Amino acid sequence: DQQVKQNSPSLSVQEGRISILNCDYTNSMFDYFLWYKKYPAEGPTFLISISSIKDKNEDGRFTVFLNKSAKHLSLHIVPSQPGDSAVYFCAASAFQGGKLIFGQGTELSVKP
Amino acid sequence: GAGVSQTPSNKVTEKGKYVELRCDPISGHTALYWYRQSLGQGPEFLIYFQGTGAADDSGLPNDRFFAVRPEGSVSTLKIQRTERGDSAVYLCASGDGDNEQFFGPGTRLTVL
Image (cartoon, rainbow over all chains, first blue to last red; front, side, top):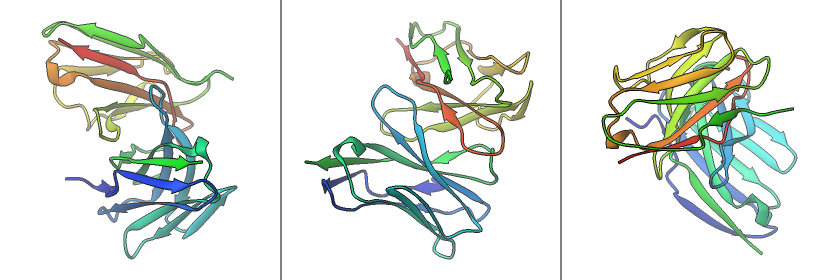
């Protein structure tokens, strides 16, 4: 029972363009959503989060959008840079500070 | 300041043996979380502590897995009678209990 799904295992984008990573969830009790970035042989690094009371949160080049009715969130990276190449995980929890349920990840490749 | 540290970074053991994995959280963080990640998957929740007590251990797969945090800081994940299916990267994270979780680099466990 996969409660958080990232249906695209990989994404390739040209440097300078927009990267859009998508995530769907099934549990309506989720109240807090996060995006993590992971390089090989390292732990996940927190990128950005959003509470269910908002529909958008922005931090520099990163913006997360939440559509509660569709149970969908997305991460936009503009402009994309080669250093953004990594695996991106979305995660959800029932409350801030609670256990995280992760998606399977999307491997982003930004080509110069 | 120092991030989350985990030791050992790699552990190879034989089927049936006992292993202990250690996590040193960020100083002052009251919440500590254990996850494990198999190849090609997102991290999977195991257990989390708020202070010294296990607030949620619903992710522990069976009674061979046990975790402690006796003084509310360092935590040890203990696996008895290891099986080949226990092979994974075991990730520890810490947080203040209200916001994002900060992950360590993980311990790669290989059971032969």
